[in-house]
Image (cartoon, rainbow, N blue to C red; front, side, top):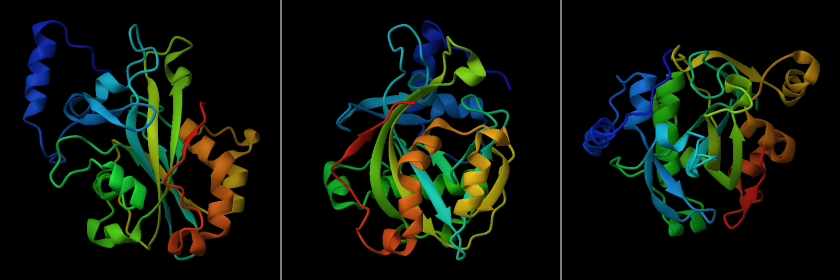
Length: 264
């Protein structure tokens, strides 16, 4: 896969003008095209919206923005009726963190969609976050082929937010020019779904029990893991998973006020 190069001069302006007309993703764009077309929601450390930027711009670690641009993301943890968690291994062609294992789906709510994927302060305070949930349904279809009808918005449970930052040194070296700097909305959902992975996004999937996940994450396994998943797994996941019914059906583990800050 060819990594997209930063447009220069009039080329950058032209790309920005082209993006202004992109309101709906139609599923036909390549990863390189989506890096320019998808507009991430840029926020400050309090999760206040300050603007928007292309996925390319938001994920560049370079002079002027050595930690990229902080933007909203979501992480979906999908469990089946046996309380097993669906993992995915990111495709080798991914620009950031290729080949790593991670939770079911990790991506971004985007600016410019109808219906909106932008949650306001009231949405977050109420724990409803319909924008993040719409984005999750969109990407679960795109990455894993899960039909949207199998995942109504009201099946998702929003738990809390995580602010983390991680350069992709494993792929790009110690001076990595790519990475993640995200304010991540964590969503749990339980459903038996059909899965048809998109090979450009996902190279493998696996349902696991908690014990199987522990074995997979043991250093001796040799498996690579996304930094956001490792943070969630090491700090929160086991408690939420052990009490999965309560996690999904009550507010026992919901924290709409806190932004957990854990840097990789």
